[in-house]
Image (cartoon, rainbow, N blue to C red):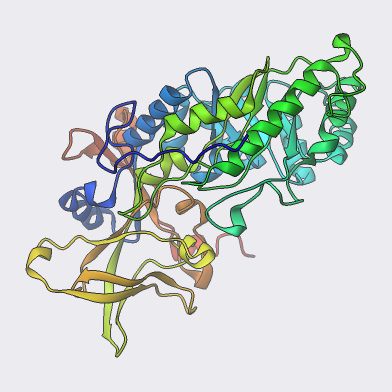
Amino acid sequence: MTAASPVAHDAAGQGAAGGPPVRRLADWSAARLRELADEYGTPLYVLDRDRVVANARRLRTAFPDAEIHYAVKANAVGAVLSALAGAGVGAECASAGEVERALDAGFAGEDVRYTAVNPPAADLDFVVGLGEDLTITVGARDTLDRLAERDWTGRLCVRVNPGVGAGHHAKVTTGAAPKFGVPIDRAAALAREASSRGFDVVGLHAHAGSGILEAFDAHHELARRLGDLTRAVEAGDAAGTGAGRYGGSDGIDLEFVSVGGGFGVPARPEESPLDLDGVAGTTREALGAVDARLAIEPGRYFVADAGVLLTRVNTVKPTPGTTVVGVDAGMGSLLRPALYDAHHEIRSLASDVADRETIGTTVTGPVCETADVLGRDRELPRPTRGDYLAVGTAGAYGYEMASTYNSRPRPAVVALGGETSGSDTDDRGAREDSTGGTARLAVRRETLDDLVRLER
C-alpha cells in the first residue's frame, strides 16, 4: 500500500494529550529568558522538563499499545533523561556512554536497548558486562560472532535495512544506507541463526531517517516491509519470502517490532505540526497483523521544542548586502545549521522590540569558518550590542553536538520545571521561576581549564 501523508494540525490546534502540539519560539517568555541569561550567562541552553514530559504523554496517547523508547542521542543531559525515566518510557542508546547515562538517570536495565552501529570493542565489553537484562540490537552477522566470543547470548534484536528511507536531510536518511542494518532479504535467516545459537531473539528494528515532517510514504513502506518480515520470522520462514517454511515449531516468538522514530518537529512558523494520531494510525495499518508488539523510538519529538539556545550580541556590522550580527554562540554551540543547513527560528529578546525598526540580518558566531552562521536573511528588530537573542527548537541535537572547536568552552545548560530536592537546591542553584516551577543549573559552563584537563 502507499500511505497518504498525515494531515497536519493547525498550528494553533491542540494535541490529543492537551496543550499545543508544538511549542513555538514565540511561546517562550522573553522576560524569563532574559532573566536566565542575566543569571547564568551566554551561550546558554534552556530545557523545559515539563514540556519533555508533555511530549511523552502526547506520544503515549497516539500510540497507547506501543512500546516507547527515547532515542538518547537526541539529548543525553541528565535532567532530560531523569524526566523521561520518570515518565515511564524506555531508553534507546547508540553507545556504551549513553547506556551508562541512561542507567544512572534511573532507567531499568530491562527498559534499555543498545542499538549501536558497528559497535567498538570497548562498547561491547561494557554492555556485555552489564548482564542480560538489556536488549542488544545487531546490524550485522559479524556482531553475533563478537557477542558469542564474549559469552553473551541474551536478549537480541535484529536491525533490518528495509531499502527505503526518508529524513529532513540526506545525512540523516538511514533506511536505505548500507551502513545500517542487515539487508531485509537476509534478516529472517539471521534471526533464525541467532536463535539456533542460543540468543534470545526478541525483536526486529528498522529506521527510515530523522526529522520526517511530511511525505511519510517511505516510513509506511518501511512498516509494511517490516510487517511482512515479522510474519515470516514468527512463522519460521528463514528466507523471509513466505515460501519454504520450517513449520510453526521453528518460528520465533518476537516480543516487538520497532519502526524507529524520525517524527519531525516544525522549525518554521509556517510549518504545521505533525498529526501524530494520523501517523500512528497509518503505521499500524501498514504493519498489519503481527503477534509482536509495535515499538517506536523517537528522539527529536520528545525534546526539540523543549529547548532554546540563548546568545548575546557582541558585534553589529552593516554591509551592503546585510547587517551582520555577531553573537557569542556559533557552530560549536549549535552545529545543525552548519552541518545540515538546518533552520532555527531566531528571536530578539530585547524589551523594546516593538519600538525598533525591522532590518535584514545574518546572525553569525565567533568561529573562523564561513559555515559559522546561525541564520541568514533573518528579519529582526534592529539589534544592538548587549541584546539577547533566542534560537528555537534547539532541544534536540543542540547541546549533544556541541564541541570545543576553536578552543571555545561548551555552553551551560539550565533545566526548568520538574521536581527539585533540597540537596539539588543547595548544590545546583535551583530557585523558583516565574511560572512556579524551578530553574537549576543542569550542566555547568566549561572553562578554559576544562579544555586542557586531559592533556599531559
